[in-house]
Image (cartoon, rainbow, N blue to C red; front, top):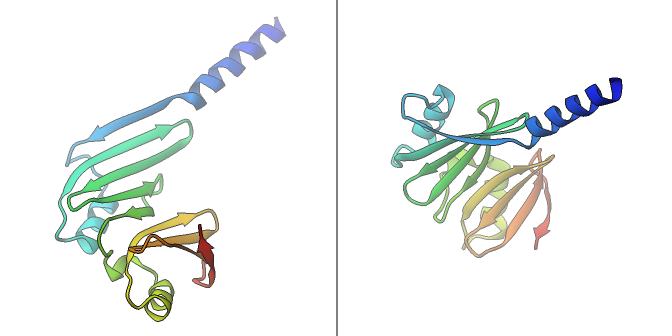
Length: 143
């Protein structure tokens, strides 16, 4: 009997962890922190869609803005990723990363930014991806 209970509990845990639920949020359901971030940094871009994605114990918010911009926030409603096709606003790029790009790639601009583990990564309009430590120190060109 004990073995059967363990198998049932294990099956329930597996089911919970493997369940992925995406919910489209209405404009009134968008968390305040996310609305404020978009208003501050992307005042000229309209929110087209917000999806709350729950995958086991992981929750994120995927935001689509007009102008080809997507944002991802974690469960704490902190920005984790910004993808665009045009130059990102300076206000969303850590100053040390922006300074590095301005000094080393003066003819290019930043189109993407992401927190990746203990590092940050930015994408340039020329297709290069640059990796930095959290403190902004350059690590490498990521190919």
